[in-house]
Length: 148
Image 1 (cartoon, one colour):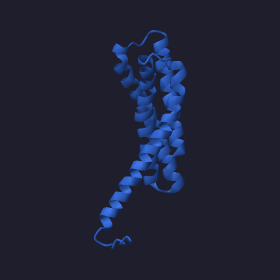
Image 2 (tube, one colour; image 1 turned 90 degrees about the vertical axis):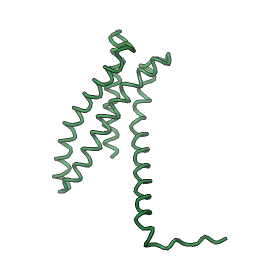
Image 3 (cartoon, rainbow, N blue to C red; image 1 turned 180 degrees about the horizontal axis):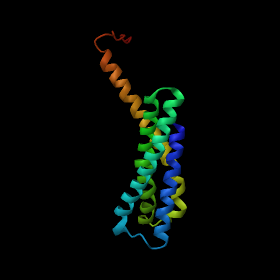
Image 4 (tube, rainbow, N blue to C red; image 1 turned 180 degrees about the vertical axis):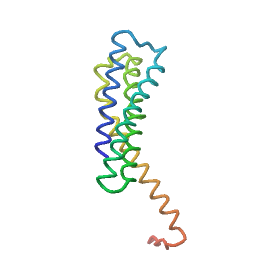
C-alpha cells in the first residue's frame, strides 16, 4: 500500500504540473476549470487502468492469488485515477483563487495528500471492520462487566 500511495503522489504532482503550466501560460481560466479537472481525472484514470491491469496480473502471478492482484489494481485505480487526479487539478486552482502562487504551494500539499488519504481510508476501513465484527459477535459473546 505505500507503493500505491507513492504512485498516487507522483500522479498528483504530474497533474498539478500540467495545471500550473496552463495557468502560467494563460490557457486556463476559472471559467474552464471544471473542463480541465475532468480531463485530468480521465487521463489519470486511463493511466491507472493500464498500470492497474499490469499490477493485477503481476500480483496474481506473484502471490498465486488473483484476488490480491485485483485489490492492488482497485487501490491503484482509486488512488491514482480518482483521488490523485482530482487533488492534482484542484489544489493549484484553489491556491490561485486564494491569491497564492500555485507553483510554490502545490507541490507540498499534493505530495502530502495521498498519505493523508491513505491514512483516512485505512482508519475508516478499520473502524468499519471493527463495527461489523462487533455486530456479528453481539449474540455470541458476553461482554465483561466494568468494576464500579
